[in-house]
Length: 163
Image 1 (spheres, rainbow, N blue to C red):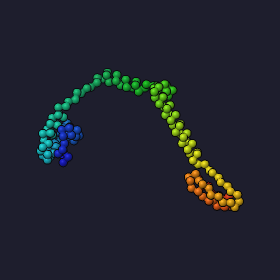
Image 2: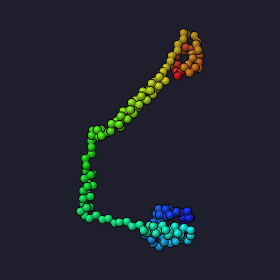
Image 3: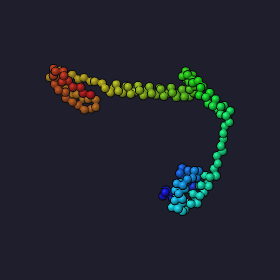
């Protein structure tokens, strides 16, 4: 109940338990809200005003006669049974400006995919170096580092790939 100390008029009007007390009072919620009023005496004028405002709200009850009910039901059923436009017909409904943006997006996507493909393919190339039997040579790698490969060994299983 402590949170009611800071309630404004709008807060009381929005509070569902407060609305329930105003519109459908019973012994339980009557005792609860009397307790709130006793616990927060400064809120009593706000509670009284909120209760008066809610009680002043009246809703007009509108009842359709059976003929109007049937007419409305037929309109709803007719709108539900309306045929769906086939996919081919929907293409014609796409606005020209939207079609232009879709084409631009497709071209940009293609350019990005092609660029990524070139970078992926060019980044994984294999370079092979060979020397004469017994000769050693330092090899400078593309990243600027250098290595001295081991001498030739006839066992090809020991061959290493440097990337």
